[in-house]
Length: 190
Image 1 (cartoon, rainbow, N blue to C red):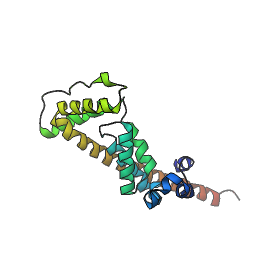
Image 2 (tube, rainbow, N blue to C red; image 1 turned 90 degrees about the vertical axis):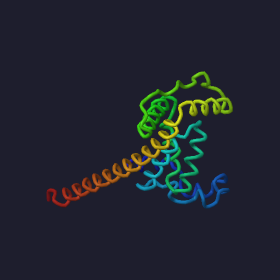
Image 3 (cartoon, one colour; image 1 turned 120 degrees about the vertical axis):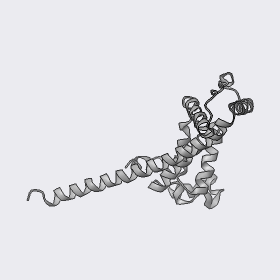
Image 4 (cartoon, helix red, strand yellow; image 1 turned 30 degrees about the horizontal axis):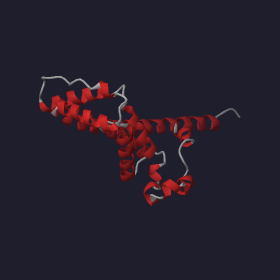
């Protein structure tokens, strides 16, 4: 499993307990599920990251929301934060367009398109960007406001079950491979 690969990058329990920044938060950040790589914790982290990735705002807002939800639901915190990166400058326009169309579908509306995004604010500070983003959201109207949470929930559910299914499939494959190795070792040449 890629688990062995990722373990090299994740901190150990002792290093978490001894870290002076994490120690301030006490037991909240010391729960074992926040740092372990197992099926439910990783699938939950992916679900939270997929959900939070569609929150309008910059990466620090999404990272903070993902970390807080990971602590509340006790799922893998690094995975939850990293998965939010699926919404980036290259993917955000298609994702918002899908959310807009999903909102139109739910509201049984077929008229109107998504208003153009204000690209002139690229590279501006958060205080300049936030009002423009909110104006854009308001101009997109109800379809986007309804479609965005629906798409976030849909992506979270699909992400959770996809990771859970892939993890189970990989474990079954490894069991079968191990069983075959044992059978050839036991029944091998004498």
